[in-house]
Length: 153
Image (tube, one colour):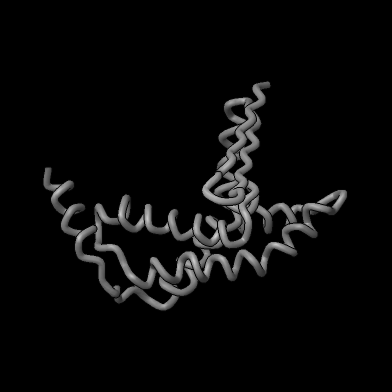
């Protein structure tokens, strides 16, 4: 009950935090780029990936993190916006690496570092012996098309 009360208080009182520059303007945009990149890898467009990163950031700020501290206004801004900018900058490099016939270890490391959610997803799929493919298409008007394919080994 005390945990819920703390969470409830925290989500009702967002604030401008006093975290370090590195946390607010390097760490948060890095994780925002992970959200952005994961959305792009799943077929989202650029703007939709920004929205995805903003929603993922808000879910974290008002969900898990709010159990411990109040949501931060600058985190809600710097995570998706900085993340989208970093993700856009890294996208051509990621595409170039993926086109290589024989990527080196450092290429794989770069792909993992720029899509840690995809890395964890791949590890989980290999452990379960499945391969998933999720595509999202935000069509004309109010239509959203989602396609999920699971292949079991």
